[in-house]
Length: 354
Image 1 (cartoon, rainbow, N blue to C red):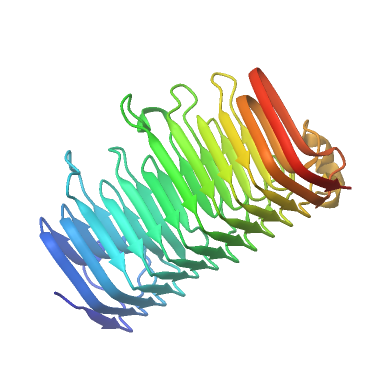
Image 2: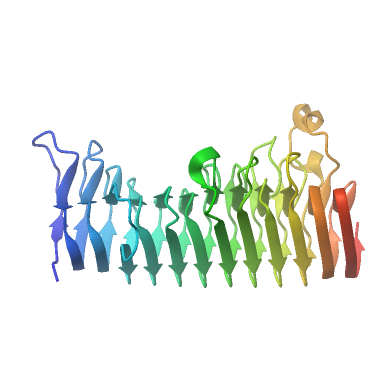
């Protein structure tokens, strides 16, 4: 096991893009490492792992570092079998730098805290997995920015974060999803609290020409999240062109969006249909009153009715059951569902809107 300690370090020599580099290495463990006030904004990363396999990082503590990223995994590999990075029991805090950027690896993050930085950037075209469990993200610009990879986010808290595109961004564009690869995103037993971002707390963009994405949100709490951008929708969850969306046993309270759709917005896209299932959800006090959130001059820019709870459009198969809506503020409605060439199964347990 290798350990590194750098404190108060100002990198001023050479034309290097990183401070420490590991190349063509297998089965590497980096433990008990401290990176404190390592400052140079010209660095792409403080520690670079290049063409490495099976890396474990334990008990890494970083504070006050400025560079592109603290950890960078830069690899070009065709075979991902057995190739993974594990990050455990670590702390990233108070850094203008980004936390982790990774490509072509599966990344497993557990028992780690991210505070006041951009946390995880995962860009992969070969079907890797990002697994995040029992982590805390607080006051981060973004918690997860994910392209192409599969995601499992469990038992984690994301609070007081945002300012960027969204707190959690998931997307697949064009060639990012091959004909035989599906992208499955599962969020289970998580809390999204007091987040502010252009697209709200969670944003997922699928691939409209060949949809193979599934979004599962289970047993999670979305409360007091705000979508700032006037032409985007959904303060808690916004989903575009995703084949299957399942939201079950969740709590949505006091979410709002500048466009006027308070909690959840699901848009199936015209070229294909989205299957949407919403079961056993509580919508409480989500604010869809647009003019209360946006300046008067922006009020006419949306052509959708204000909706406090759930807005679903171009969804072929929709099932809604066991949901409770209370004090959902909306000029138009608490639920709006537009079903295209399909069917709607609707059973709401209790409603109380105003």
